[in-house]
Image (cartoon, rainbow over all chains, first blue to last red; front, side, top):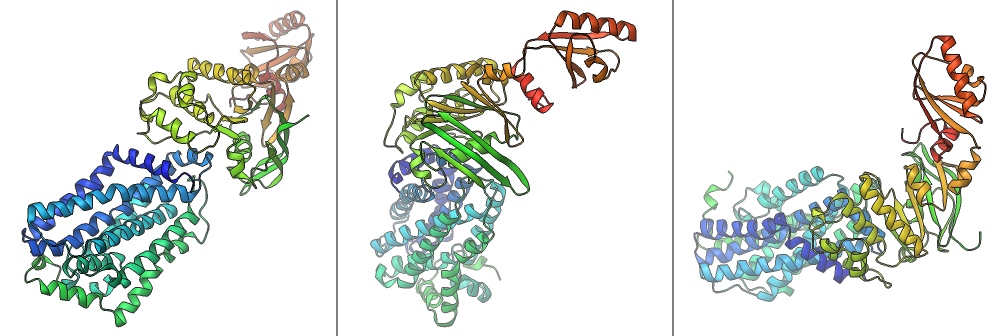
Length: 297
Length: 306
């Protein structure tokens, strides 16, 4: 990992020149921000506070899409082939893309917080340190998810399809668009298996209840375990060229990365408190979201 | 050979059922420009990529600068420079950034500004990669192969797909590198390129080296005969033409006949007489001295560019 620094700087420069990247990491999150805070939350400070959880989560989760598409494009165009000639390791390539993404997405999160303060007069954001820790861990873990997707797909089309499926699952079944509390029971059962559910729940606890990060053990441990596992799998399955064949058990490895959340999901369904806690937070706000009446079923 | 920089012995490589390399052996000395000449799919790229440490081999031994590419790929990477086929850089990377970024990965570096000047890219210094022409991209690829001031350079089809003008520019660059005593291994399917640039050439076909030597040696090997390439109005057989006075051999190729002759004037007279008697006609006639192309045809029965 000797060349981590120079590679990260180069990645950032390239991303800033990329219109698609700016759209997905700045314009789209801001669109979500105004849609949620302005329309769903009707601009009421306490509702906006509550909605900042989903808003920040969406901003951060987008990382996986950008990183996987970026890596697959580099591989398809033969750019990775060129990098391969230099004394670089897969870990150099992967870690630098996560780091660059982290540095570029963080300002968007900060901007969203500032806008909430200035435009919607949100005065309390709860525990800032807690938010910072959650956002950092989430960018790394969702970024790693993207790199795993990139390592098992061969073409841009495949990548886009898989990313869309993951994105919609995260979007609709985790509390990112509709609060988990108002989702049908069957979806709630599914939600406890999704990383995004824990991210959103953690952010809402941190913001609404000012929960310090060391009291977010479940949320943080699961995401950290997931990030480590996903990064490891992505670097093991990393391919410099499209012609390199995937090992036969690669897809199995990729599926293994969801293990932390399968375990957590099973545990949560039996003994868990994440759902009840997020319901409590939801109910503590009298009428937090204008979207509840439009929730499915 | 004293102190060869590249040593390849009995190299073999398979892709599934396909035997890409079947026992390739050669050595390249320090400062030598060595060419692998052959048609597409002959195994040139496989050979080069095994030497670069990008592919594994199935058999044989390989040493590059005293290192085994498969076992010590990291150490090898700082000793070599390469321009691969089908590589690219990010669209929005500037020329100068690419040179600086890749130089930063090595301990031994060459100055990016000097490389720009050398490869005629000074006025493209701040251009994005996707704004460069094909020739400029290729010059940048060659410049990037030099960022670590390597001992050995590998150029895989450095002029493929470039127009003649640009191709000549690349020749000049390789000539210049020869002056710097760099060891260069390059692949090509252009005969003239191999004849012009190489100290020694290995002709590769179907995963084997079928001839190896200096361009002059190879041509002499194919005897001091002159070639007549003729096209006839009506069909004729090789056997009949081979028996003509002054003709030592004949083979048909793409609808033409290639006559090897020691005494061309006799052969032409005999040919014309024979055609008149047969009521056949000469459509075209070309006389040439032997080239590497002929060596290739002699050895494989095919033209190189098929």
